[in-house]
Length: 284
Image (tube, rainbow, N blue to C red; front, top):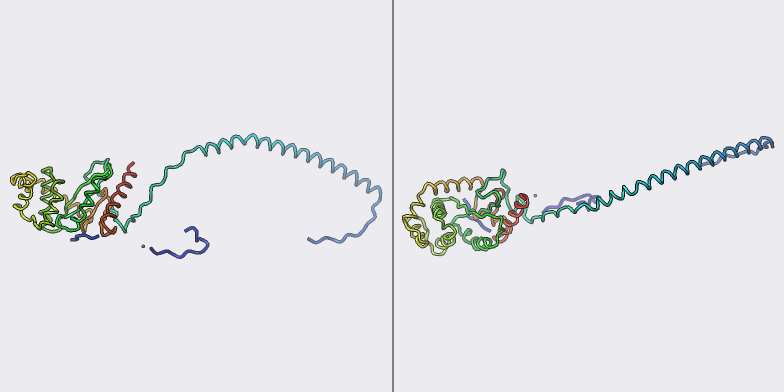
């Protein structure tokens, strides 16, 4: 981070992915007749008496103003007490360590989600054939055990190539058959550990048979209009979310990030929690 030099007067104000900033006057003595002196003394006495009367009147006025001020004091005291009785403002939300434009990207405009309005959606954008997505799975599985109750988790497969599209169809067939969560980790393992490409309907049907799904039921779902629609919707979401590499996460249709932006999978999980909590606070 670059720091700008400030004038001294203001010193204290201051992973990886698979991809597709005064003079006195001299007087002369003059003899003054006694009659003039007497007349002057009488005048001065009269002036002194008048000044005394004025001072007395001013004291009375001042005393009256003091009494008025004293009478107003209780009202001022009441105002102070009332001000002190106001409740403290709500504490500010904790500042995030993740920075928009650096650790994640804000989507403008925000995109609609498929989750209920009272839930914060966290979407994992993935590709079964991506080794980095496979390595991210243990972190996702652990997070799913402890995620906040207001979070709705969804998966969105990308179709960067023909093989990925076949795998997307298989995933959405599993969704239709109600076994998507059951097959996800085994599918990754079958491809990356057992080196089975799962690139034909026959290979996929055989894999699904391990989960008590007949070949007929699998092929019916795999070739269904519903699966076609879901795959096309995944294409649209990939474009709307501006996904160029996986694994990626999308929080509530507003923020997109990946392990390469935050420095690893653990930080990516932390960012998911942070932004989901931020969205939940804003909603409430």
